[in-house]
Image 1 (tube, rainbow, N blue to C red):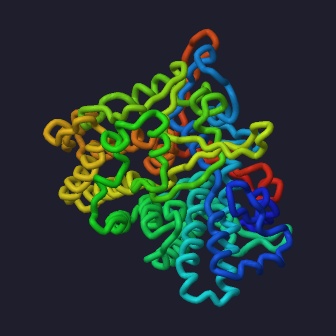
Image 2 (tube, rainbow, N blue to C red; image 1 turned 30 degrees about the horizontal axis):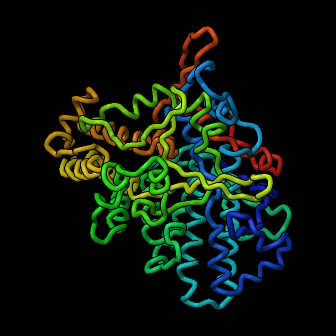
Length: 505
């Protein structure tokens, strides 16, 4: 497919504005000339606070996946958008909270700020003091573009042509009302992501931040690199980057301690600790405007969300021979309406008298837990490609370390994973298939309501089946198979109106 030259007057609403805080204090107005004010390292560091998407993908990624179900009209507490459209793999109207369009806008705002930082570095003689900020801007831009191409373009095919439409990749701040960009291809988008990532990551070595887990530190960047190389099929690079996250190589004590540190906490304490910046398992957090954790209006109440069937999967025995547990892993105000109780909402008051404001959650967008399981998958893939069974042993070690933090009274003798155990559990005869199934089950349960399942659905070409319950109680199922155009989320109508070619339907 040829690159399309298009006008992007509205890549995102408000593109070109920079926000320095949750309160959305405007540092730059629409006048491009004022951008020269980013002329100190302190201003540069403040600018990069806004180089991260301030919305998350949990709502639309989870609702489109097999982590959602139809609970039926009478049993659900709400039948609301955007869950209705997303569950039916249709395009939600507008860009309200939880929609793909809202996330698209947030990513391009972040990219605009990263571009402004990079331009300011070029225009000012900051010297070596700006290296970590240049690295942060490059990796932040790469991350936002990677998430955009993952959700809004055809899935990357390992060793494929990847000639489908990519996503716009602006490299400089917008200074005109309707600049022209090329949407390019999936291949060209990935090539630029790789360039940004591999140029930016070395600059982060030794970086320091007041609150590191809200920035691309070297650790967070390597975790992102492990995700990127998992998509591109560069298994050895996945392993290398994960190995370098911790100098002591110890993930077991740094991933989420469900049956350790988190286990004795109260309901409220658990939610706070889960996304606390000081916790080793949170490599990158994002402050995101979100109603996702709420009951009314959030994922727990919606008809098409986490229901009884998904809950039974979440709480069932795993391939290890026991369920993953924590004291507050499932919460329900009225079954079959559930939430994993992972996120603590912070309410930012904008009007004290009226008690109105904006809800935020600290979204864990890169974690030590994901990095460890990325390495486990890379080992499994290497075992198949090289016919070297020792890689299975390495993958099993990672998976057992992971399970030991999630199974109460874990015992290696009782719960330790083996290939034979996985074959029996999944009723398969192939070593590779058994191990991949063990990995996918572990990830699906571990990251429930965090959006990662959708990425696995895309990479592993899994068919999603949604149930639909009619008013008379009749239940039917509809599949979303690999190759279905609805597996690619539609770009916002504002962007289409500005001249960007929409994804085919």
